[in-house]
Length: 116
Image (cartoon, one colour):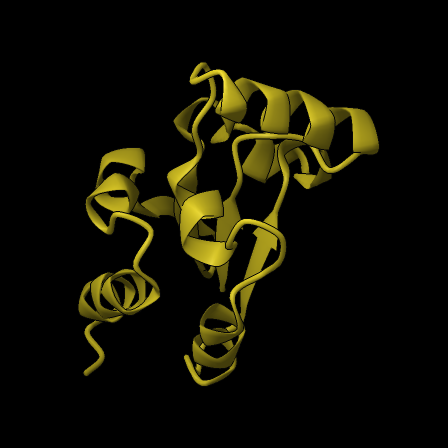
C-alpha cells in the first residue's frame, strides 16, 4: 500500500491556513502541487492513480493513524507499507523535483516500485 501525506490538515481551518500560507509564500506542499490545480484535483492525477495497480491513498496530517503519524515531519512524502515495514518511498525533495508534473510523479513512483 502507498500513502501520500499532504503537509496540512483536512479541516476547513487547516485548508484556509494552508492557502493563506501558500499565497504569502510561507507554506508549500509539493504533493498538493502535483495532485491539485488552482481550484480542484487534477483529472490526470486521478486517472493515473486508478491505473497504478497498487492501493494508493492520499491523507492530510490530521487523517494519519499512529504509525503513519510518525512520518509527519517528513511531509509531504509518499510512504510505502509492505507487510509490517513502513518506509518513505518518495521524499519531500523527490516530490519537489517533479515540479507539479503528474507524469513525472507517477514515473518516479513506478521507478521506485520497479514498474514500467
